[in-house]
Image (cartoon, rainbow, N blue to C red):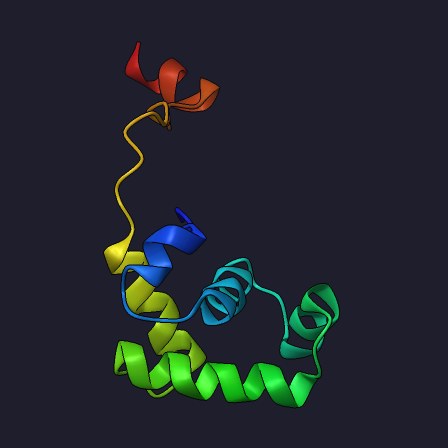
Length: 93
């Protein structure tokens, strides 16, 4: 999944701190770890998440992630995945 950067997140109407929280949520961090990384209390992280949910019009972390994924630009630099395995190649011959 492509992670939106802080500027892209802020474009959607959240504060800089809320964008930092959102970026860390996208990376899979818990509220506790987000608080530790940002030097704020877990309760403050939850407060920011409440505001983030309102801004993005979602009700949960999972809904937020889906919405952010849908906003993410497609990474066209990623190499195509070759799913042909050795056993598949042998079956093709």
